[in-house]
Length: 438
Ligand code: DLL
Image (cartoon, rainbow, N blue to C red; front, side, top):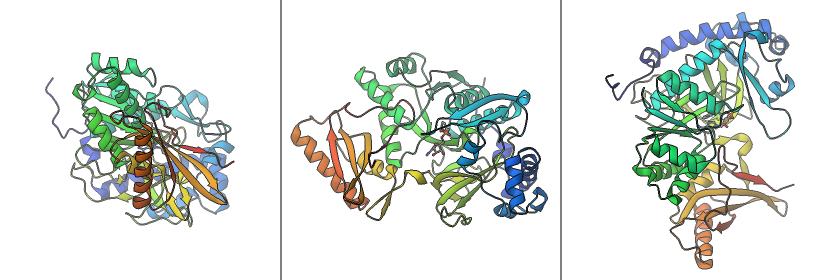
């Protein structure tokens, strides 16, 4: 088999469509999606009727802004299956996301939905630099979480050799990465760090292995964390985004050419950014909450789903030639935002600061508490193994991090430096914030 060219695309024709053609496809598919939900899902019919709108009232893409939003509690209120457009006989799979309290949110797929998801994940992996024939080590968790199976079916669709390891058993992960000569690592960025750390403890030079790409997502991570991962693993790390309510991983993915924003696959999704306070749509380029409408989902279409993820969109041409809009790195969810003495802070901003402090390892946790009536945070960090863990070093490094957070983000907080291994390690989505405010 001849090797595909470096700028290989999974679906060249669709990925490079003109913006006008994409908009035409979107309008036709949007009308179809509105019809599906209005005819088959009482929740949507009630909401559209309440504002006096019928699917036929959508004449242009801009008319979508008149239709109601969908939010996570709508899925909870319709637990488990009332958001589905069709009976179970037509479904082929269910997934669910755990959520912190109460019932999970349940999503369903037809055979066609699974097929399109496989295509989009294959498209994403190819954009990230994976190629047919590559060995793809998949350390996303398998099960109700969409990460494992989503990446798995995408890798197979691409024509790659998938190793379905799932999360955990980190020493075995290192052994398999080495013995099977993996080309691509799929995991959360925080778990990739745990793998790198365990490899080092095992005396395996992970940067010298053939792995050349990391396809990382499912949690917010910073550019600074990317630099740390590239360096520690000797790879090019690429950001992949998605959410169960919309599909799973592969809603958007960076190209390895530019690595400046994730191409959102606009032939299947329509992306908006809104002001989370006023709920007004924001112009291209402005930061706000990402809202996604599915255009081809059969079992569970979503109309104007409020993701709570904060980002910006750009339709500037990309060096890779793909024309689909780019979603800039998701800085965090609006429910993760902390307000510390009037300053809005996301965990990923704290991450960016401490990853760039020499002698500090990239593992951290943020404890939310109160000082008097005010919200406060304490940041727990770990010394890098190359720094001797003496009391003097621990307090000097804590002071250095505290100073950097103050000068870069502008907030005062306590910093506690710990010895290597004292903070919990992630096997999937890292828990970055512990709320002790009571
Ligand atoms: O995390 C799907 C996924 C799996 C994406 C594997 C990428 C890789 P959920 O468990 O439903 O689905 O969580 C979705 O995770 O709304 C974001 O808040 C966050 N998230 C996902 N990808 C990214 C990313 C999967 N690249 C929620 N950057 C989303 C920042 C992300 N946050």
